[in-house]
Image 1 (cartoon, rainbow, N blue to C red):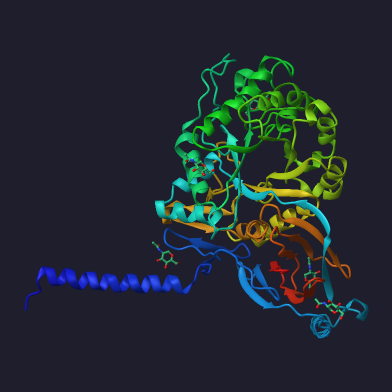
Image 2: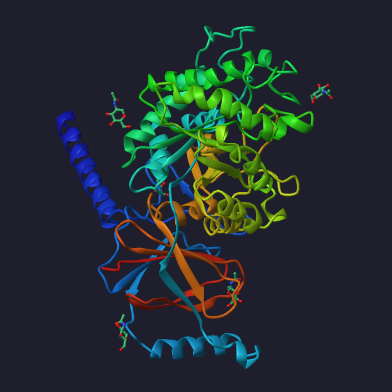
Length: 550
Ligand SMILES: *[C@@H]1O[C@H](CO)[C@@H](O)[C@H](O)[C@H]1NC(C)=O
Ligand SMILES: *[C@@H]1O[C@H](CO)[C@@H](O)[C@H](O)[C@H]1NC(C)=O
Ligand SMILES: *[C@@H]1O[C@H](CO)[C@@H](O)[C@H](O)[C@H]1NC(C)=O
Ligand SMILES: *[C@@H]1O[C@H](CO)[C@@H](O)[C@H](O)[C@H]1NC(C)=O
Ligand SMILES: CC(=O)N[C@H]1CO[C@H](CO)[C@@H](O)[C@@H]1O
């Protein structure tokens, strides 16, 4: 018997059709949520592997009706935004007894006085700052890594951050020209003596990589992205040391030729990006001004003292932005470690000429444990409540003692969550991670300043790994929409549990709880307007609880 070619094609097509039906049924049965494909590289927990056709996601979050609550749990044990749901208990005294029993069982060696259950009470009448947003940075390195993947995997990666199934990023920091996470040194106006900026031009890193990716991110985002621009160095010819790296500042004085030209450089940057329909929410006065001040810094830096920054904003940058076609662009000062606060803010903001052009203060997270948040962030807020505080950079793996990429490190997830929570509890309105994606070495970076990222790409297998830090970001960024307002939370007794609570614009409440210790803790959450929620924070876990109030 002979098969006719036509019959063969027919049977292949029906087989293929059946396969497609089965595949789509499989996808549909997940109803918008899908599980982490975990891989353990020996650093404490797992990463979630994604490829061109698959990536875990909880989908868009909708809360159950009044009287029920949702929980999302990530843990060292391997949970990743694992969804739970339950009934809010109304005036139940029984719940308290049950909690006490659990605690007694777990801690039979603890003296009895400590055994009352931990209760966290939401105080929505105590209102604090409102959230602006969360995000990461589209560095040259991030763009190179994302574009090194297949088209399908690129799409998956961008969707993870920016689409409504993703983790709700709304802020993208965009370096102006090169930084250490570039493969070469450049600015947009490297022609010596070009004070008119006639030679100003974006680089191919912008036009071929960062801009197309930002446009794709914007197209899939349910909200307009808040773009934030930061420059690392001015062109060498404007600087005292005639180089992009090392110890050096702008030549001359604020109000002088170089300082005016450097302010115009920002306006030219805004104009060029606007041609691609990308408008900026804010710009900073420059990345880490302290870096170019003291030492022979190894990568791009531009030193500014706070006094020079004050005068530059008052005489050059402020007036330039004000009289440009982008007068509503916010100006953030500092863009450097928060331990410089409140000192730096005092110098700049006490000056009425500078202060009137400024909207906020940008902080980086390096060396955060050296100075308590209350005396840096808290004190700054107290002195200048009309200026907001905003996290502009953070990454894991920067410390020489704990360098580079560690796939699956749970300690780093806790470090992120701890810092975000500490910032939020001290008036910060948003938190921006560093590189959106890096390769397995933590680069590319032209000075080999390799660090970690929430997304690590593996080009050879066309996959990317979502690190535990990705989920730390998600526990905040996916739930705390712009306009969410921090409210009070009180604990009925001392606890090492860390927590923060918000009321969202629709009235729903979000409580985020971090347990950095190795045993679980039982607790009860009380919202006086709704009821009580019994729950437990497993060892080394991050938990987001959310419920409607009407
Ligand atoms: C992508 O990952 C899923 C889940 O692990 C797997 O079933 C699928 O075969 C992978 N696809 C490709 C193209 O590797
Ligand atoms: C420009 O971007 C906005 C969103 O930011 C979008 O609504 C608009 O359609 C875009 N215009 C063009 C010409 O792409
Ligand atoms: C600064 O560092 C660079 C490279 O590390 C070196 O070439 C240069 O000589 C140093 N300059 C000073 C003044 O130490
Ligand atoms: C709990 O009981 C008290 C007194 O019986 C009542 O005033 C309050 O409204 C109740 N709370 C809820 C959430 O039902
Ligand atoms: C932050 C922290 O460690 N919180 C708690 C985690 O759970 C253990 C066990 O109940 C508590 O002792 C910790 O205080």
